[in-house]
Amino acid sequence: MAKVFGILTAIVLALAAVVFFKNKEQFELRTAETQTEKDLLTKSEARLKAANEVLEALPIEIAGVDAEVESLTTAEAAQQKSNDAAKAEIDATTAKIAANKEQLDGIRDKTSKMGDLKELSSKMRATSGELEELAQSITASEAKLSDLTAQDTALKADIEGAKFKVDTFASGQSLPSLKTRIRSIYPNWGFVTLASGNNAGVMANSTLNVVRDGETIAKLLVTAVEAGSSSASIVPDSLAPDVTLQVGDRVIPGQAAAKATSN
View 1 (cartoon, rainbow, N blue to C red):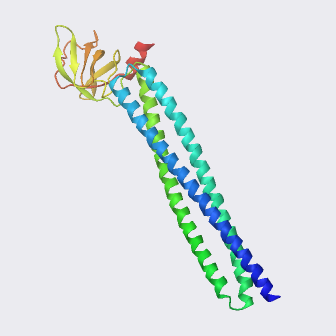
View 2 (view 1 turned 60 degrees about the vertical axis):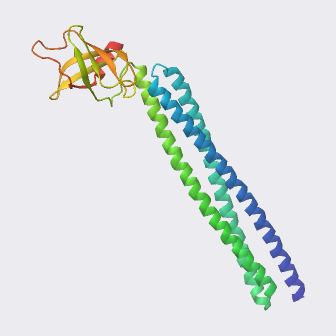
View 3 (view 1 turned 90 degrees about the vertical axis):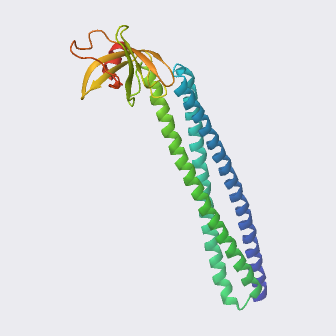
């Protein structure tokens, strides 16, 4: 009777080993799917970079950038959904491995009372090794998932930055981060040139403030913008009679004035 029971126990263990191997195949499949999603995320980042270059070089193409941002947002949502699904698969696999290990421990406890079963012991050690390999694979997959999450966060930040630029340009304002200086002055024609252009955030038809010693001494209206330079008209009556503009005077966005002009 004991011999029959031992044979049945060996069969059960063999079936358990088969289940473990199938679980390993499923886990490797999920890992490959995670890598595919990572490649998709890399492609999305490349598309975002291309969209940003278009935005910086051609601010007048705001409508095209809006479409690109919407596309990237959709891709980011899909990526997040895939990440969540991958994490759920990992959690389920981990729980299944824990349950199988618990079952194996119970079988080991029963067989320990049946005497010296060298062959069964060897199989159990091999199964234990498979469990350790699966645990290491899970750890590696969790690390990859963490990297994907970090990249996803960075992608969100890039999208928010692009949206902010689009909203700012759409409102007819230069970027709040703009800091430039007067490059040359043409008093007879009433305009100046600036050392920065649309690459730095200068927007055509926006209002800028000329600041000296912490005070606004004049206002400018941007009339033409290029990649690395721009020109602006001196707003009439904004310059005091006893103040003369100088090359090198600091220029910053005039947010309130720009909004008033837009309205």
